[in-house]
Structure formats: C-alpha cells, structure tokens
Length: 162
Image 1 (cartoon, rainbow, N blue to C red):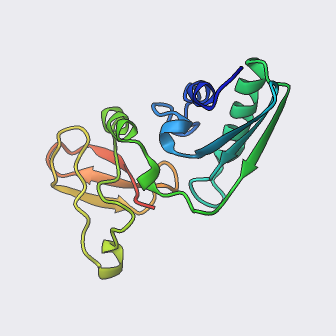
Image 2 (cartoon, rainbow, N blue to C red):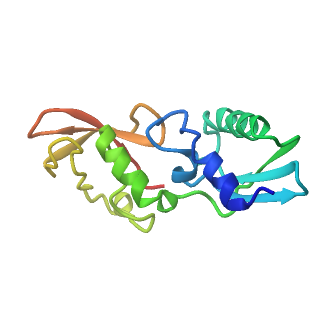
C-alpha cells in the first residue's frame, strides 16, 4: 500500500519545468496528497502565481509519474488559497538555486521594500558580492528579476519574493 510519504518521494523526482535544478516538491507547489483505496489518488497543487505557464506541464508530469507507478486514477486539484509564496521554497531548494546561478529569495514575503522604494540588496550567486544592481524587473521568467553584479560583471536571475 502506498503512503503519502511514498507519493511525495515519487513527486520529488519531478523537476520544475522552468528551473530543473529543483523539484516541484522543493518548490512547494505540491500542497497535499490524498489516497483513495489502492489505485486512486488526488494531488493538491498551488500555482506559483496566477497564469504561470509551467503549471500545465507540472500537472502533466504529476499525472504521468503516478500513472507509471501503478495508479489507475489521478486527479489534480489546483487550489489558490492560501496563495503560494517564496516562503514555501525549502532551504535545500534555495541552496540548489544559488549553486545553479539563480539568487534565491533573501527575504520572506514580509519584505515590502518595493513599497518604500528601498533598493534591495541581492547577493550575487557566483562571487557572493552584494554590490549588485537590478537591470530588469523581469528575468528569464516572470517570477525572476534580472540583476548584474558590479564586481564580477555577471548577469544573474533573482528569484523574487512573492
């Protein structure tokens, strides 16, 4: 008999479609798993933001993984409350992002510096300098901003606090 822990373990093998260095479990979009009998399962997911283009791929990947592992019926239930935040990223995921060259969120979602006009200090994931500047509010995806390090001169994505 499958357990929630086994299912989460299976789902942790699925990479985020936009950031393949972390899994969808580490990203925090998998909210719950419900098992009904031996062959039916429901997976509760929360999108990182409304309209995230990767959600359809995540749903397809979850369904495929579970069907390949013996489940006959897989239901995906997308919930929007509570809204996903970068606080749901695991610490391991933040380290993986940094090693991959993406600066992880440095504050919790309680960071409201954008409201006060304060400049956010973002650490360069390559050289660890805080001498960085935002180039664009949007990076390679809408959930990231593009920054440049003034010391090593490298551009990098910053996973925005949402």
